[in-house]
Image (cartoon, rainbow, N blue to C red; front, side, top):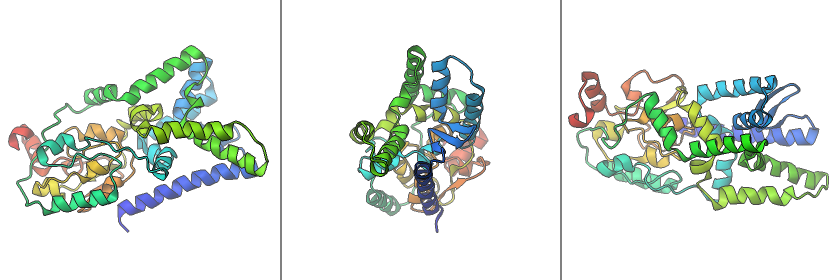
Length: 344
């Protein structure tokens, strides 16, 4: 079984286990809770945004909350936004209602010069297969680096990307509003909490015959956030905005390109399948790919859709240019100190 297929199956199993744990907590009254506040007894893990909201709303430092936040932040520093693909129910709900965002422009940065399709995350598998077939059919050309993005790497580039991200601004608004209002406002409308709140409400309705407004209100709020507005995760989710901050420090389990077999890196063919498959519009061939990967959710779609199986998710940080998305010629130019754009 290919790594991409293994990752997809593992994600399904993980999400299923989370749902089973929540239902088991309701059925047997174990008090495990939900991903918003999950644990046993005095040991629990909070949603990082929810924990920060609680601290701001109470205007007090609660030791248990701080410890819980510390554990979650440590996880985020190691794995970045993996929660978004492996634990959050929002993408599953969008796919169920066929409301994955049809993003225009993913791959445009390189596609404008390299002949890419420009399609974004949410592209149908059939369309990705057609794009891969077209790329393979194009005659090989001298390998070259994408020259559309020329930002400096490092902390400054990461900071600029965070400032441009709408989710960072949404995060700021949520935190300021919580501090002013004195209550964790986003927790009232968080899709994660609403999803498991809906599960709990339906459970009590069916099993305990308890009829509450939450049976109607929670699903209605979810429908507005995830079904009617399909770009919630990409544009407005403050949880993603917060995890993006940590994601720029997370170097483990990032996708790496094998430049020797990549159609674009080794043969100069206009393949942008990885960018098209990515819901975060990450272009592994861009010069600032290392910065873009701060938003990687480790979903494995780029691995799964690559027509030459040239992408792998590596447990350890990148140790060579072949793993950072640059073409072999770009890497060689960098090693010589040349400008990769001029070299291309």
